[in-house]
Image (cartoon, rainbow, N blue to C red; front, side, top):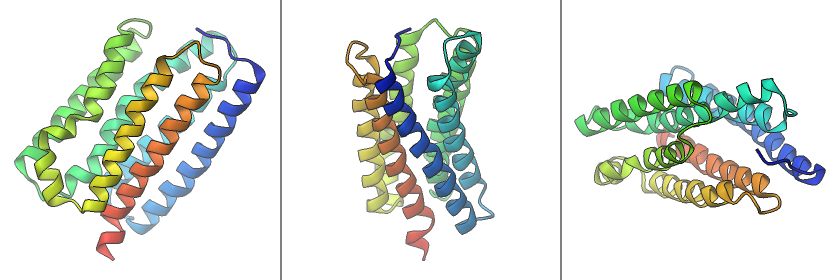
Length: 207
């Protein structure tokens, strides 16, 4: 595991602090605007959980506790992906392919959680591949998504997905200074765009 210098840790801490603050405010806003929506609660819980867990793991000093936090940090990514899909798939009026995609996404995500909690230091490349594949699995129903969701929502989802994917390059570029902070900046930017997509789909287009 790479050791980061003080400047890198400060930069990463600032990004995480902004993410947690924005995540709590944004999720609270969504829940207030759609208070009876279970999909919004699932998405909001997954978003805040991944931001908090990521901050705890990345900023915790090297120790046994940090190793445990690493398991949960990596596992939470799977839940965020599934949690982000949920509000959009629910908007598709019970279309069979949307239901099937939702079931598959959650099954793979839960399997990924078990994988990361049980074998935290194994299958690293497989886990990264699963993150990317699961994130883009919506392409299997892209025609349905385009036809049933607002175009602005689809645009935000796609750009957010691209940012997540490009960010993976920095996640694996261990020799680059500020690599971790840059990776988390891409993650935060993608989270913001996907949050805007949820807001657009569930609130703005219903106004």
